[in-house]
Image (cartoon, rainbow, N blue to C red; front, side):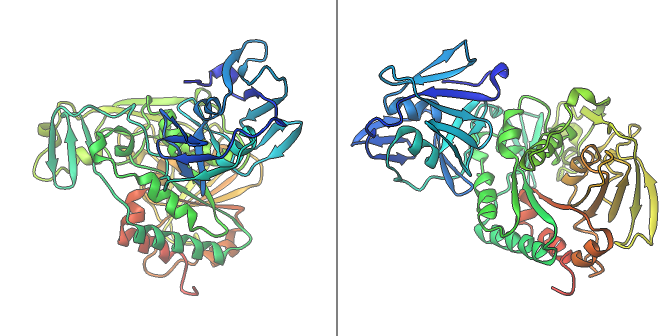
Length: 449
């Protein structure tokens, strides 16, 4: 398996003769490639993302006769055939050198756990072949690398306690729910045509850590939402979360992600925008060791102390780099002032330390001085996420989707009031599947819909 190293994060280079005869007709199947009737099995399964099928680079091109190796002089992988010198350059961006020309691709190279996958159109050009899809390729299936081995399982209501140490709740998203959610997001975007609208969806912890038999393929549901969006830019988080799954990106006793996990999702958002975020090492962090999550506090019929060997875990609280002030309001007009709050409260030892918990409207002023504004529509997963916004925006408006069911919110009027540049709509599988939470998000469209 050819993997990217930290020192060579930018480029993979492959040498080949672009004008040579085609490798032949290639059919992509779930298990590998069929080239002129000959089967070439894959170790890593092809997957569909953004309407495009991706194949593992270091398995697909060798199947076409190219040999991969590491070239120390260019600090990159080299792929050769017949010793011919012409190159294909696969970079981390969307522009690649094929033979003698530079080509821009709408589906760039994807890195999953240090391994590169290339889109069908890029693979066809690189291999100088006609490529077809022979199977119904599914969305990326999160690998088993970080799955916790099942030793002991107890179920309490909808929650499952694994090995007396980790709690999760399997959540499947139906195609009907995905379609309804996408329709709500599209209707929000229709009402604010001058705003850059983004939809961020993330899997829950069970998709990465729970045993395979509990896997719900939430990523397939997420991709089905993204396929239906109109004038809304998807923000994919599954890959980046998986790539950092050895870190504490989710709590083991709570349904939320950690602020660290939210950081990587925010980083993915900034990458979609072509921007960067400060490294985690640049932030001051306050650490508590006695966090007990919502799952552990609300198991049906049993206390967390009896179901778990240890209810305590680490709570990291990263503090914004920029000076700021934050206020909570009970209305979208900022007339019903509720409180002045810290973005991250170091004295708090539960998830409410982020943005003071679930508040109707939170306004953060005094972030990075660039004049830019963002609105974030969220449920509680967005609390940890929005703490990162001041490092990229001067003003942040955070709206809880559960707070305005009385019809007192209208997204078009909200824009007329504050003229924000971007809107980020954040959700996780429970939100997509829940009729009640979808209704909360739909309430933000307003009466004039």
